[in-house]
Amino acid sequence: MSSSFFTHPAFIVPVAFSGFVLFWMSIATLLGHMSGWKAMHARFGLPPGVEAPRCQLVSGRIGLVNYNNVLRVGCDRFGLYLSVLVFFRAGHPPLFIPWNEVHAVERKDFLWSKRVRFSVGHPRITTITLPAALFPGTPLDLHP
Image (tube, rainbow, N blue to C red; front, side, top):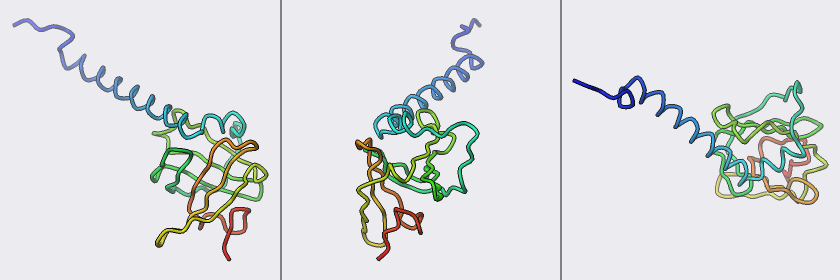
């Protein structure tokens, strides 16, 4: 009974797992490019050692990409902090966007969902849509 090393489970399982991880990371990186996250990071990358305020896990849209329950969003008087869950971190380093880089803010209501949509950067890098309830007392608070 002869068996090739390349068909042995001790070889196939680690190779398949490594292939899946590389595939996952390349998809996450591609989404980071499509959403504008990479361009935002070039201007608004969170410096190492800076601690973001308490963040909530939410769904939102950045550019062309929907981020369903993987966005970590926090804000303080200085600006907006964005990151993603660690499994999606490839292509999505943490961001800090100062309030003076947020413009064209508009409210988007659909059924029971109240969201705020805004552009980031001068000139505009991308648009972001997030739940409006996250931003009381900030420049994104559009409550009448």
